[in-house]
Image 1 (cartoon, rainbow, N blue to C red):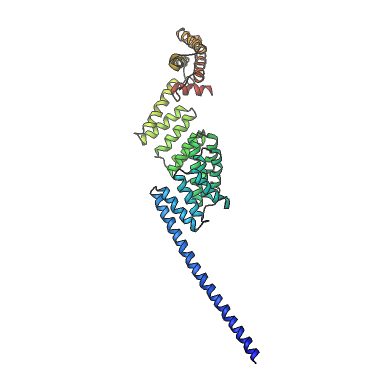
Image 2 (tube, rainbow, N blue to C red):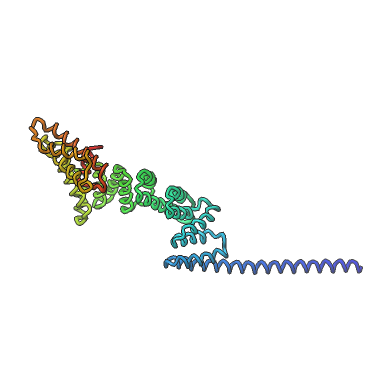
Length: 367
């Protein structure tokens, strides 16, 4: 009987001990959860403070707050990405790079981290590497507004390519965004102008004609079509488009200057249809005279022996009387000599003018 009681007493005591341990463990877990919740709340407060500091341009202080938040939650990607943004804004590209590498080592598809990495590489003048990270951002994972963020990343890349005049790469980025971009007129006009910059006036004209169809009184549509036709050398059509644009925006000086330039080109171009032999000859002589004057101004008049020989030939040609039966032949000779002077000036002269009527007409004829 005594043995049975002793056994029951032991079991009872053991059960009480187990219950006590379980209770203490539960209390400990509860306290840990409270402590963790308080820590997360503190980290979130620090993060919010950092965001406010960044909004006020206080990036160094924001970095300190974010580092404090990360001391509590080391793997929080929102904190890490925001820290990289603050570091980059504070001019600390290397620190931002290290922070982003930490994020991307865990998730190489993180859209924002890839975008920030691309920006870091641009700062470090590693543009080719930067482009690959922009592409990863465009096709990466975004927690919110994925479509909008991907489009904005592509436009940021497009802007960088446009500033560096990388026409081939720019065109490649514009093609997929043409249908995906917002349909507002401003964005469509921007895309049309970018197609012009990328050397694709045909696609630019298509964009601007679409704007004209949807908004017949929109000045940018006609100005854009004019620029597209101008780039293709269709100066008469461009002039008409610029005239229409000016009816809707008469104070647009840029469009007016383009229209005036079209008029000058149309008066100078010897290849226009319908010109009489006399008109064509006079225009060829005018081009030769302009090319000569342009060459004479090269480097303050210090032209090479070869250039001087061309100038002497031009002077002789312009003094020679031409009969009506030799107008066509003389016109061709004038134009050939004008082009030789133009090509020589391009090779030998520094700071040569571009975009003037002479340059545009001869460039078009040389195509």
